[in-house]
Amino acid sequence: MFSQFVSDLKNEFRGYNATRLGQDVMAGLTVCAVALPLALAFGVSSGATAAAGLVTAIIAGVVIALLGGASYQISGPTGAMSAVLIGIVGTYGLQGVFFASFAAGVLLLLAGILRLGRLIGFIPMPVVMGFTSGIAVIIAMGQIDNFFGTVSEGSSNLEKIASYGRLGFHPNWQAVAIGVLVVAVMLVWPKKWGAKVPGSLVGIILAAVAAAVFQMDGLAVVGDIPQTLLLSDRLSFSGLNLTMLGDLMSPIVTIAALGMIESLLCGASAARMKNETFNADQELIAQGVGNVLLPLFGGVPATAAIARTSVAVKSGQQTRLTSVFHSVFLLASMFLLGGVMAKLPLAALAGVLMVTAWRMNDWEGIRYIFSRRFKSGISQFLLTMLATVAFDLTVAILLGVLYSAILHVARSSRIAVNFSGIDANRLRTAEGKAPILETAGVAYVTGSLFFGAVDEFNRRMGEMPAYDHVILSLRGMPSVDVSGVQTVLELCQSLKEQGKTVAFCGMTQAVRSYFDRAGITALVGEDTYFWSADLAILELLKNEAAV
Image 1 (cartoon, rainbow, N blue to C red):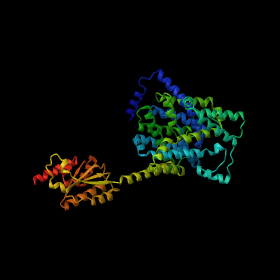
Image 2: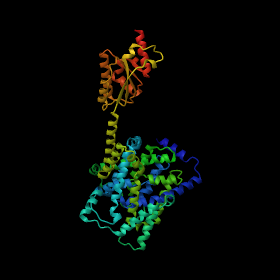
Image 3: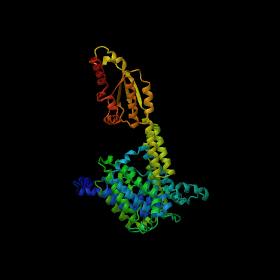
Image 4: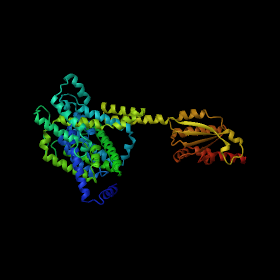
């Protein structure tokens, strides 16, 4: 794995020159403009601080990029991760988040070493879309207080919303005005301008100016931005114990699962944009190392971010140095603009997150499955989305994958068996109509023969015409399990007891292996296996002539 990583680095920087370096610098500056407001917003929305969001973006942008599985990945705090963290902060505090991040990083590192990157391919797209939309809902719900300037109670978003019935919902119209201003700017900002200066950055600048000009002193603001990468509130191992580890097991798995899903989906998507290869296992190692280091500095968990990554690609990114330069510019912003960022209204960041939550949804994919009326896809999407909002990401993904597996089993159990007599005129070597062909037929089996399809297979075989010579065409049967081969073995035994013959054709190597181990080959003989039905029929005619 290490030699492959070194080889990929050499290919990435082959022919690197001043021109490409300049492109990386400019792309890094553009990504910084996009990442700055998002880092502040995601830091606050995660239950930590804006400074924690900045530290996360800076360190992840260097460490994860340099060790990553692709040239284009930009990692940092994300909306999806923030939505997960806010609940953990409410229950376990920041130290709980730091330790969960550290442990999740270890899991990601192990996943990369064990080459588990391909597991992402087992999560259906409607499930991914569902949890993304569910997280978008959680983000929007979590910003109600900041956007409207209201007060709520509770550790989860649902509890906070329920508390409005007891506490009342009393908006601060100054906060609402600031939030609406940012939303409006982001929605009307032209896309061609956004490629250079993102609407989110323009929106929070205008919001800060408006708050100062109109003296909106009643607004909650970001607060002090420490000019250091080593925050005072960071992981401390002194308070850790086995009890806390047990309590945090679910959050640890959730953070690791989300880190894997977001990073690998981002990498696969950007790989198509750049037409480059993506090393999923190396990316998991990079994400693991990054998330082990981040809590030691006071940062929150990071993943690859599709928004920043796509901006980098569209801005002419050449190598992974784009991510490093984006971190350098963020670091400069922390030192040079810390005083300005400290006065940013939280309502402005809430406006950024509201629009971000809306844009997180895969609207094209959602419209596709609903407009084409894919009932299974719609149910997978809705189940996962609702489970994400009501429970957490881990439960939602497990439910979505389990439900998808049940749907797949149900669809796969629809095995078809069609019977056909034999037309001797279609056999060039057959002279006239041989009598044996009148009592021979072919059973065409379509679908996997496994435990869920056994009953249907037996029912259909019970309806088979009174053939004395049966040819089972298995070209449409890609796989079989133990229940399936046991059923075929019993069928062969029954046919032999009745004095009938049986032959097989079009069998895949995987199915043949099962037949050999099940004892079917020993029962019927090697000479009953044929490539095609016509060869099996010709063998029948040959045997008849011999008799």
